[in-house]
Amino acid sequence: MNSLRPGHLKINDFDYPLTDDRIAKFPLKNRDDSKLLFLHGDQPEERKFKEIADLLPSNSLLVFNETKVIQARLIFQKKTGANIEIFCLEPVAPTNDFQLAFQLTSSVVWKCFVGNAKRWKDEVLEMSIDYNGEEIIFKAEKKEHVGEAFLIEFSWDPKSWIFSQMIELSGLVPIPPYLNRQAVDSDKERYQTIYARNNGSVAAPTAGLHFTDRILKAIKDKGIETEKVTLHVGAGTFKPVSSETISNHEMHTEQIVISLEALKHLYLKLDESIIAVGTTSLRTLESLYWMALKLKSGDDHFDVQQWDPYQESEYKLNAREAFRILIEYLEKRNLKYLKGQTQLMIAPGYQFKIIKGLITNFHQPKSTLLLLVAALIGDNWKTAYEFALQSDFRFLSYGDSCLFLS
Image (tube, rainbow, N blue to C red; front, side, top):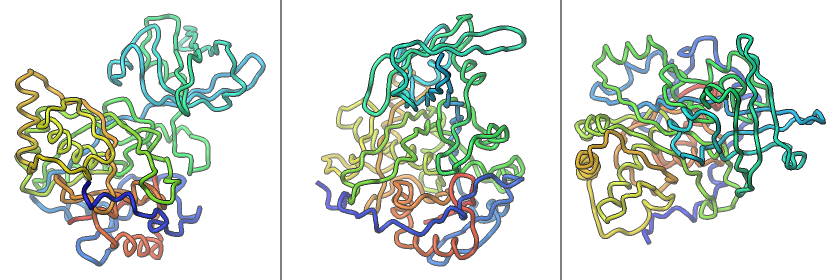
């Protein structure tokens, strides 16, 4: 076992005083009006997000997560009047592929959290949706208990509608629980990046919320290249570390998709500055290395476990070799996309393989996301967060941004 395995780390060492008044409950009027904490070295600086193109190295490749937040919260009412909230997590049957599941007609089974579950026995829940004078009946049937969640079969009539349309018509935006408010109409637009494309997330990749067409043009004008990946953000992103040490914390698993074209682009830029836009993009990029290492050892499941980077391996790869392995695997099979899943835990002691920097928001105390930041910038995370608190930065999903360069 690698001595760098971080299981012994105490989560209380990654705490800081975050009061409710420091949490941004709503976004600023303009996405790119947010402040930016810039850290390149030991001293943080307060800048504006509008300046980010000037702060990025000219040889950067920015990697965005183009997942799209779905309206995952469904409120059904029982005949008795009791509300049952169903929170969609991931598709199960007849497919676990997000893109295919959203195109299904007639019915689909999803893994879901259920609020007020004790009040829901065996009855099939129904809601009536009026769309331009057409009545659509949307049904939910509880099938079985799976850990903390349930398998729910959704069905609808007319059957010609697809599931993405059903949740678009009936669902609510799954804003983070720490906002302590109900979703409002503006969240539908603002809790979504402007480049979101692939349905599947139940939380936004919030580092991307600051980007506007104006910022993207400034980046392009500077000659900075961009690339897209997809990691569908799961509800586990909000799961606090409740154990004393992180060895007892189970990371959530999330689906990732990256095109062969993107892999080739990244391969050409490995010696330059690959900057992840958000922790989700970072975890996707770093997971690719561990997938390649497993592939070299004969495991082609593309499934990264949380402690994989901290295990001894008989194989050693540099980043260039890793990407070559992935590219050759896809090309031999005439595949245009690599699809897999990752449970990767990045914490102090982790050796970064791909990225040279990170754009990210401020994260909750004692969270796995804060552990990731500490892995990248070391104890400077304390300096940065203390500076942000003293300088009236806004925190969490709708808050301000950071740029960390190694």
